[in-house]
Image (cartoon, rainbow, N blue to C red; front, side, top):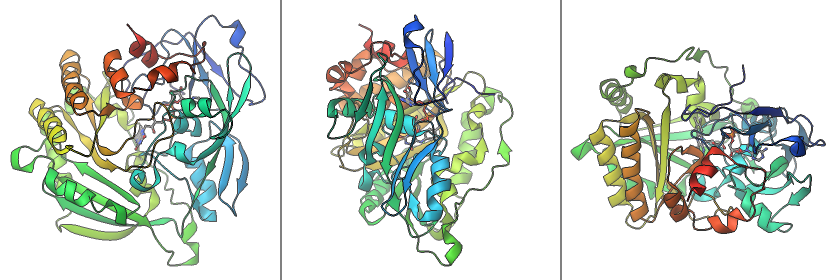
Length: 438
Ligand SMILES: Cc1cc2nc3c(=O)[nH]c(=O)nc-3n(C[C@H](O)[C@H](O)[C@H](O)COP(=O)(O)OP(=O)(O)OC[C@H]3O[C@@H](n4cnc5c(N)ncnc54)[C@H](O)[C@@H]3O)c2cc1C
């Protein structure tokens, strides 16, 4: 059954109507609605930016058609509800790859644009929006606007990273990346702390994809220890090497687990085992692209591990210069609060400019971690982290947020006023109302 909730399942929302959008030639009945609307694809956003409590959702999942694929030059035009999983199945056998993929392939092209998502190759490729050549936007007035860097450029920049607030993206065209094979040559390096991570991430430029898992319950000397992964598309060893690497997942979490199951003891135990999973300091191997890019997709509905109350993800970025201090402080606070999850990620963002007015990625170190929702103490802890990020001149990612204040939002995204002028008068979201509150 289709669920209209976000990935963290916090906060909950009640929607006045769900309106399926099936044909790109037709318009939803905007004029007949007395509520605001928001596009909704697959709810892989963690917080409330994909929710519209009290309003209507435009369900774009039926917009699933490919329109054109130029497999000589590597451009793909498709409807906005097509997932990256479907694109991979189509383009990998022909030697192409999406230009940017996040940690799950179950996201739509519309969602990837609206959050201007980033991947493990941000330091060389920038965000997803950097590779969008054009899209068609339907406004609630019924107007259809073709947007590209040259045509309606203001609306183009507002819609990339625009959180679904500027209108409904019907279809988009993206530039793909040519690959020699469906495998990734991967190196995994154990590091003992934050300093070592910073040194390793300086080698980013030699590899197309880099990311690190970090044990955020480790303390003192071990603070910030983890595993650094780097990889590159590999040359094929045999002619069949361009097959998609999809292996059907057999694991799933069938119901909400008791939330007490994830406690500092169980998470510490998991982290210890994960950290020592490789006894050698460095391993190298050829792996299929699926487990390299989307390790969590192997377990369906893993968000249920956090139980009924749900969880929040906190992703921040702090500028490169002086990043060490704030990242250390955040890790210390998380570790001291004994709150953190087993899913924590560190990465260096590069300097390719993000095209969206509200795009989150900017040069610096980004840290993402899950926190079980335990009410006021959880919110207090995250407010505390916001203070560190604000003081460092950083930002928090709206796609993963469910609680940042209006004041923080305005500091993180100074172009918000320019952006607000492009918001469609009938479009809104739970996130947008919160960060617009006086
Ligand atoms: C396991 C996991 C790993 C992740 N890893 C990363 C990562 O590495 N990097 C990263 O950047 N993100 C990451 N994310 C977040 C995810 O990539 C984004 O939230 C993505 O935008 C979700 O896409 P979706 O199709 O599910 O859209 P939804 O979550 O349904 O919607 C997202 C936003 O897009 C808007 N939208 C959707 N369709 C349209 C449309 N047709 N027209 C206009 N607006 C639209 C919605 O209104 C909403 O504001 C991860 C999420 C998960 C669950």
